[in-house]
Amino acid sequence: MQENKRQHRRPEEYLGLACALAIALTGCDDRATEITDPDGNGQGPPAGAVTLAFIGDQGWEPASQADGPRAVLQLIEDEGADALLHQGDFDYLDDPAAWEAQIDDVLGIDFPYFVSVGNHDTGEWDGAGGYRDRMEARATRLGFSWDGQLGERSALHFGGIHLLFGAPGTLGSDNTVYADYFDGRLAADTSTWRICSWHKNQRLMQVGGKSDDTGWEVYESCRAGGAIIATAHEHSYSRTHLLSHMESQAIASTADTLHLTTGASFVFVSGLGGKSIRDQERGGDWWAAIYTSDQGANYGALFGVFNVDGRSDLAYFYFKDIDGRVVDSFWVVSEVNGNSEK
Ligand SMILES: [Fe+2]
Image (cartoon, rainbow, N blue to C red; front, side):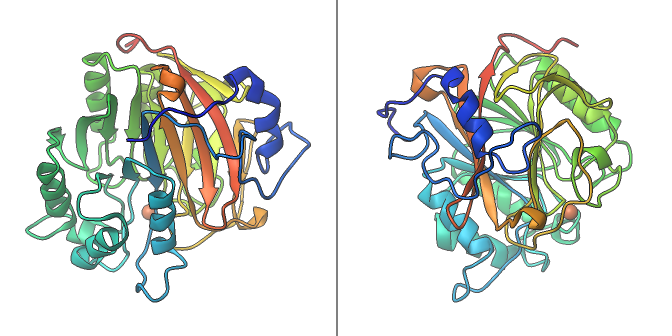
């Protein structure tokens, strides 16, 4: 775990700076293409108790190459992340052993690695030596316990953060099964921080060519439960403003300090894990940041630093690519102190 020893600004002091940092940020005129020190203190992002990395759509490459998926894993190692949440589509080769070896090569065999199954992972998902079997063995070896079927419909706690995983649009045909599961787990838990993770999207919840795959129920259930929504599938990065309703893209606030409640949350697509980089095909005023080939994107990961400054309700998020560019940064204050509003 990282020590909390850095001095940094209060969230409200970052509002203007965060606006200046984001690329393709609606309503912000100032755009920077290279930011390596977001808080200006010469020490990189603020320290917190727990740092999570979020990626999807990874791919595989030999160690001699290391300019795609291995470079992203190295970035995650270098940023000092405590765990990785992979929102699906692993190696695209149906080779669970090679995929896990790539992880182990860079992050080590004891690095906490949690997944949501993607559409390119279903062929080798089940069975001995498959992706799920390997993730279960890894979690068990590291001492984690979980509810449900890991990577499909499951929940666990990491560093006090409630992590929920689903597979809407990827496994099975009834997406309400996942929404009902999220409702139940979020209602039964009192964690300040909650994250819903799955692979696919609704068309308006990504900026590329993906279609409606998940239904809106999972988005609304996690929003109502005060959970951050982590997705992938489209091979770019995008992040919404704080939304009070997902299906209608109702914006609760465009501030770069997002106040998370049981009723208002945000969605991100972190799909630059190393497989490929796609262009922007759509937008909308609900998007706070967009990073695609049209913005000159490279591979990278979104990082969430939780419990900044010893504050259990404060987190700092930033997307960093393998060239060191921070193209989106924002604060999140959790006002979730109890159960879901449902
Ligand atoms: Fe996918």
